[in-house]
Image 1 (spheres, helix red, strand yellow):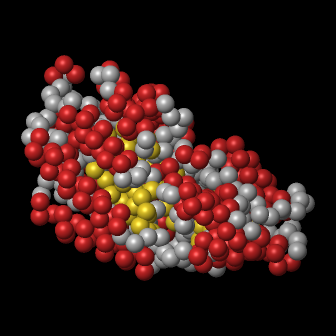
Image 2 (cartoon, rainbow, N blue to C red):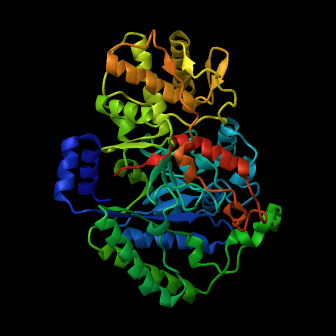
Image 3 (cartoon, one colour):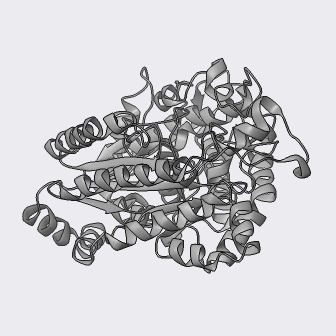
Length: 510
């Protein structure tokens, strides 16, 4: 991303007049994130392919994102390939799991985990690999993570900061799959900025088919034109460096359908001829040069994403006007699905709404005046499904509700997630019911200038969350479609955890 546009993006993120200036002076911008899953640590020719790719992009003044497997980094170090490491360091370095396809892969070892133990298990298994990549490539933080194959789980996103993956202090997740998505655009989910499930905004060219070049050029131009007409957007393109040099993926040779041979028996994949590799590089260079030539299209990296898509709800805080609008929408949602809210250039997930309503009502209870804009830390979703025990009387005594509100506030400030249940005396209520009760109480406060001390509060219904529909259904091909997982491998509990984090889903706004 060139320095002038980066400067304008920073203005747009932090200074309202800068945003107006940028919008007025520039046509809609289309960005391309080009990323490489850098994973084959068995075929030595992959080392040279990595360097060649990095060098050819550097020569074109294009910075890409190389997501490096922990073992790949260690193998480069052992082989003394400082030249490869130096070449890749001119780009952004992300993380792509410790051993990638050695069993158990992430979805396998997280398949029976809950939320909190799943976060801890991912950090335990993957933290060392991330630390090795940081050390070997001499970077303070890795710019993103993406899962190997279809081995996805939501707990990984909540653990990214723990293992040093947070450019500009923002965890980023960059990959492609269908487990969760939002309108084929970047989104926030489980505490991370996601480029995932990009659908019609994801594309690539087949490297080893001479007839594929022109159709691929045409397709990427069409995507850019469509996005430009829609005000701009992001195109996602990814490859693996090993695709230039192998005949078959390295992991399919060794770990297919649950196979897990000892290290001594690992075999490198068969290699393509020099002529085939050279021709593929030529085609790729032609493809990339075409993308460079498209008007107002710019290459970005995962490290640019937090600047391009700042979460103003968290960096600038919620305004008093936004609070009033959210309160009204919540009180009008008593018979419909609850969803994230977009107000101007701010997006509020349901977790944001829970945090906002709890904080402002807590201030009112304590006789404090809320200072706007109100900073939100950002909450994760619950760690378990909502309690099945619901208060039989939907009308709440004010004093009991008051105490529950202050207790809920303490919970979110110490645990940093939406509670799975909130106690009203001896009765446990679902967080959705409590959120609507918070809105009912605050709506009364806004209207009458006082709390409903005599009137009490109406408990809401346990309404469904609209964002849960954005989570994939449990089908045999969702996880089992990856050649490394066992045939038909399924992980319904991972999807259960994913639906809990629907509380956190919201669009990422440019």
